[in-house]
Amino acid sequence: MPRSCQMRRMPMISPVNRRRIGMGAIIALAFSWGLAAGSYGIFPYPQLRALKNAIDGDDGSRDPSEYVGNPKAVEVGASDRQWNTRARTVIIGDSLAAHARLEEMFPGASVANRGVGGDTVQGAIERLPGILELQPERAIVFIGHNDILLDNPLDQILARFETLITRLQAAGVEPVLQAVLVCGENPACSPERRRSAIALNRQLALLARRKNIAFVDLNEELSGERGLKPGMTWDGIHLAARGNRVWRDAIAPYVLGYREPEKAIGREAESPR
Image (cartoon, rainbow, N blue to C red; front, side):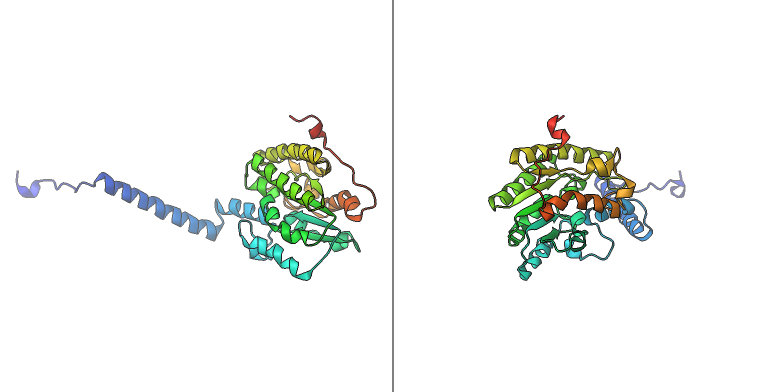
């Protein structure tokens, strides 16, 4: 057969080069998808944004140093120490507490807000030295929501709660432990996370009993089968006006001190499952 009629054979690509080409294509596709997600708001940008906002309580106006996972969150809390503030009651929390207008909820009361958006129970432990400089008599612990949204192990969350409570008691501060609110309609709130919050609250009720401290669970009033009720929240995570009023009324006895706090043990603690 004439040489001109012979079929030219394509050069063979080695398995190693095939893998390299394949990996390059995957990386290029992932990079392109990431750019498109950020530019056009396609999957998974809305889901990641919703999770960040749920954790931060961010409307775009907050100090970025408060974002979850940022070690500067401790510095945000430490900056309060320069004012030499003293308060009989302190609220230790995350964005649900940070959003509260305590001076309007409790005019004239000796209460300090130590809520930091995006904070976790471990973050509260790390901020505790500065909090104790308030020389409080009582601390309302309203935190743990971000631990649930971050899927932290329940035994780890519970152990950190116990550490926080123990250190408060060792400092002569009376803790008032609040149940975490079961999240509602929000892309960051899955049925699994709702179940985790419910399971954690059962253990927190038992912890409160063991430590002989008050336990305040607002879920019966604020939440339904699918978590926080629409009228009580503006995003399925944070409290709206009605929800804040319920919270205010529940903690008023502890903030104002007009009666001795009850050692309230939730019903779940009576018959743990």
